Structures are given as structure tokens and as C-alpha cells.
Image: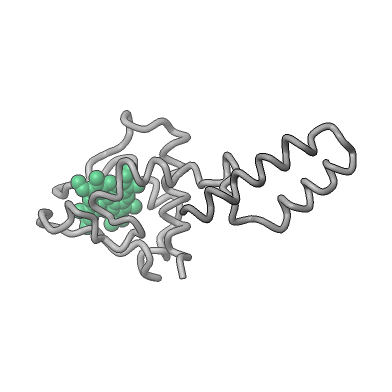
Length: 132
Ligand code: HEC
């Protein structure tokens, strides 16, 4: 973390010094290309913010179904990383998130999240499936 912070500060200093010069723009573009690990604004998947806030407590930070609340549930959350789970279509997944699963703690998120947020969080659940 400390390492990332100092990298961030160095990059910011670079931006400030280089802004305005044509050569600076080229160098900056190059730096952006070779440092994908830097957390530039917007790089975090928008669905992750929603997921961490609303879903991780049951589904776990990586979608393994091991969130802090999971052990209190009668019906446990599925493993989002499993191939079986990921074989569901986007529509099926979105449907579960939107309308919930009857007789489980997975309630409907329609009305609590906007259409866009529902799609973003679904896309993020999808992405968790490709976590190595
Ligand atoms: C209070 C705990 C809890 C929270 C919070 C929660 N879920 Fe769930 N979720 C569950 C449980 C339990 C199941 C399993 C339901 C079942 O097996 O029918 C589930 C199932 C699912 C499924 C799979 C449904 C299926 O097809 O079997 C998806 C997708 C899902 N949740 C997404 C989300 C998303 C996205 C959020 C956050 C916006 C979220 N969940 C928040 C408990 C939760």
C-alpha cells in the first residue's frame, strides 16, 4: 500500500511538471500504458463498489460464498467462481439479482439499485468467475 501511495505521488508530480508540453503528453501516454497497476480514477470496475457495499457480506469478497454473514444463512450463497454458476446466462443472473430467490435471504435488488447498477454488479459477478 505504502508502495502504491508513493508511486501515485510520483505520477502526480510528473503530471504537474509535464502538463502543457507536447513531449510531456507523449511521455505521459507512455507511462499510462506501462503502469496499468496504478489506480487511475475510473479503473476500478463500477460493479465492484456496489458488490463490496451490498453483496460481499454474504457472497464473500471474491464471490466464494464466504462472506461474514454467510454462516448465519440457512441456504448458503453459491460459489460465483464455479463453472456451473458461470454457465448461467446474463439474463438469468440479472433476473436473480433483480427479483431475488424465493425463500432465501437473497432478496430482490430492484428498487434498491438502479437499472444501471444492477447491470454493473451483474457484470462484476461475471468477472469474479474469471478470477484466477
Ligand atoms: C443476506 C445475504 C445476501 C446478500 C446481501 C446478497 N445475496 Fe445473493 N444470494 C444469497 C443467497 C443465500 C443465495 C442463494 C440462493 C439460492 O440458492 O437460491 C444468493 C444467490 C445469488 C445469486 C445466484 C442466484 C441463482 O441463480 O441461484 C446471485 C447472482 C446473487 N446472489 C447476486 C447477489 C448480488 C449481486 C448481491 C448484491 C447486490 C447479493 N447477491 C446480495 C444471499 C445474499
